Length: 310
Length: 153
Image: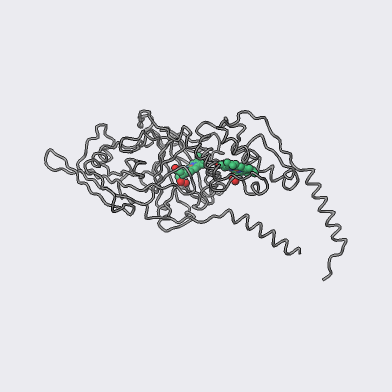
């Protein structure tokens, strides 16, 4: 076979240079919109977030010279866009207080599980890593947030007549079409939890298919598996150390159908709030927030946290 | 030369990808408890003891748990299952049930025309250590029969 001649290499080099230059011209610029409501946290916490997270999750992104060179610049622009869309330290008040606390716990987890900062960023930026002692500072901080020791002192509201008379035509339906249904009350319990952010205790039910899959050690879970989590506030601890459920807060559903819900990792997500069972969210995008978190932390168990594991 | 560069690049890519490991979880069905036809009354956390429990009851027990005076019913059966708490894997900030610590059965029976009596039975689970104290029977009966049902939608 004939070896490619010198002209071949020359023209290849010219083409590559042109592509490279072309990329630089179309290379995206990172803009920093105004800071409207910056997160307010103790200095030792802020300093960690600013150094390791602000480059993608704020309006104070500092771009290094090498980040401006295509194709890296495209990657950086994409990460900043995605990062800001998840949460933005410069527009922190856009999140209600309970969501702010949940996000802070999620950040601790993202660092502990080595999901954040993104790996490539850590490699390319000195100071892109969060050390073990810094993670300890963040853990200490989230454990002092008001939700950590929140006690439900309100009188316990039972279902009243208006709640009970949910006519079949009035079954609450989530914005992605998943209806509320009470049949989980006949299912088996797969897990019971004490969650630290927001002060709640939970009971998680699995339908027969879900329980069978756990017994058969079957992962990923089969289509038709369903999980329902019921959430209550926590009452004050009594003298023997017992903590009892307070008011009902919400019920959360996960329904496995790998085709129908392929966009959300094969699970249909729904949440119904309060005894009125008001469907969560303003638009169908609510389900993205559910998937984003379950995808990041529970891929090893088909995106379900609450399963018995050794 | 070109060959070794491509090997180097694919090795690097593999290395980066392999960091995103998806080790599959090992399921532990022996932590599940099948309460048969009994339904949930409520869950109870105890951080002093490091346990988390579920109180189940049959229809008569549930009736009591929904009664404002908590009047005991002849024929009520309760099951209190207690697990050791453990941190939830992959999520710092939640404790969940681990190994079963104990199972307590309580039956309300008619002793004579006027009096109800309680049959109480304690079973140790795998998480129960031989040196642990058994709970005091009368206290447990009182705890179990004084629980109001958690509010469900």
